[in-house]
Image (cartoon, rainbow, N blue to C red; front, side, top):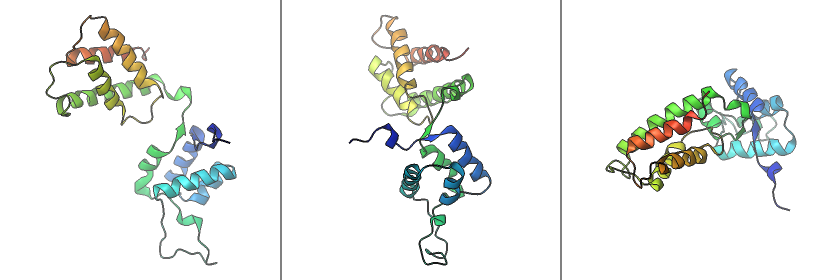
Amino acid sequence: MSKGMDDEFIVSEADAETIATLFRQGVSDYPAIIKAVKWNKAKQKQFYDFMTLMGYYDFGDSLFDEDFTPSLSYLRVPEDKYEEFFQNLPIEFSEDFWDEEWYRGAYDELRQFLIQLDKKNPSFKKKNSYSLNDMEMIIGMAFCPLTPKPENLCAEIQNLMRIRLRRTSKDRFSFNEILLAFDKAFANYFD
């Protein structure tokens, strides 16, 4: 039997918020997190695997507790790794997470990053004009560091931009034309 979607480790927004609350309280060890989120054994094992894969150990002076058995309390997220933890934690966001405020923030960040890509990326900084393939590549590159993001947002923005740019009946586009198409594509997400 192949692994289905039920076997994939995904954390709900509510569980992620519970973990964030624990972190704010200075609690980041595996047993405390598991107790707070009340996951079943399978999900606990997946979370254990996630934490060990990320290397979140704090062994202190000893690997063993007073009974000479390995203690799960040594499996913890160090305070300086909280941001990294949440960047890598697979959180399933509900549709209302992606509100207009999120889209405006993403738009601002992506637009600034696009401008930097045009100026500093060796593939683009010497170009005077771009093809549709170039546009798709630069938009895809801009979306890479954006987390979290709706699953199909990059493809939707690229498609909207492609339609807008094709309407000009040109094969090559200036960077300003690409930015204008980006602005218009993202405007669909604002009220």
